[in-house]
Amino acid sequence: MRSVAILGITGSIGTTALRGITEFGDRITIVAASCNSRVDDALKLCKTHNISNLCITSDYQSVKDGDIIQGIRIWKDLCRMLSEVHADMVLNGIAGSPGLIASFIAMETGSDLALANKESVVLGGNLLFDKAKDCNVKIIPVDSEHSAIDELILDCGRENVEKLVITASGGPFRNRSIEELDLITPQQAANHPTWNMGPKISIDSSTLANKGLEVIEAHYLFGFDADHIEVVIHPQSIVHSMVRTRSGQVYAQMSPPDMVFPIMRALLWPTVDRQVGKALDFTELDLSFRKLDPERFPFVTDAFECVRLEGSYPIVYNTANEVAVDRFRKGQILYTKIRGTVRDMLDLDWSFRPQSLEDILDVQTQVIRKMEGR
Image 1 (cartoon, rainbow, N blue to C red):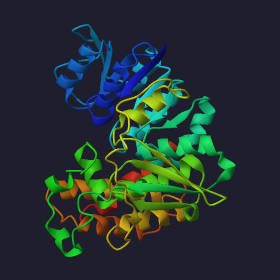
Image 2: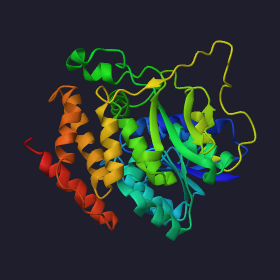
Image 3: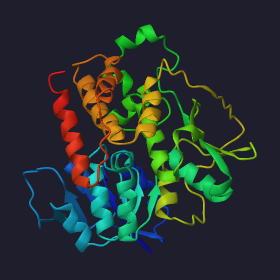
């Protein structure tokens, strides 16, 4: 029996994990969870799934640390909860850059990390993996693309893999003319054609900023440089990633577009011994691939540049994009200005290489301050 804590229980990762774990009650027990907003929903989920500890990370006025609500112990300090209620594995499904600190906290308490928060890798870079080594814990990727790559590398052997091939759906606007993109609303951008995700990540998937983050993530997770990573458009989201071997053969990981597969692979790592979710049906399957257009999706080109430059550039890419997407959602900038806003920041000198978590947070603060008034 493996004990698990779910961070971000009300989000798409958290609720999907609950759906998967329900089928594996003989293998997994959930000992703790966290939420930021939607506290009432979190309490209901904890009650339904017999989770006895909930950390509320926001300033939620009606509860305080130590309260017991319907048998659920309330915590206000995530580090203290994870220290006192140990979990064998922490699933980090927190959205955005706040997930970075949570990843460090989880590792410091001795838990293996099932990492759905890609920002932890993009912001933390090599420091994140150094921390995992120091704490003697594993980091297992949950993003469907990186989960697929991890599995393919294990099967093929790292020494035999020449190139990583990350697939991208292209989002809802892949077939629109570039001239039409100024008219896109936040509601349209948040409506992903194949995945059910939160608004911010859905918008990132439409601009392919999300795919850029995944390029940077793949670089740090698997140690491949920019020349050995490529991105291809695959609208159906059935092939989650591929690897090219040194002999020229290509191996792909395929499954329905459902995050339950990579989540349960991470939580049950290294062995999933029975069916997870719905099996792939080949009878009506029609797969297509095409080259990524860098003019339509310049965020991906920017990400490869960040991989080559390293320093603080990946941190700037992520932080500036979060600010720009927030401005777009508030109606302050056009959809087509998201990338330009980020590019303005990347054009500055960010060659400084962070040496600590504090350095990373300081770079984020610098980016936010520089963007004020722009």
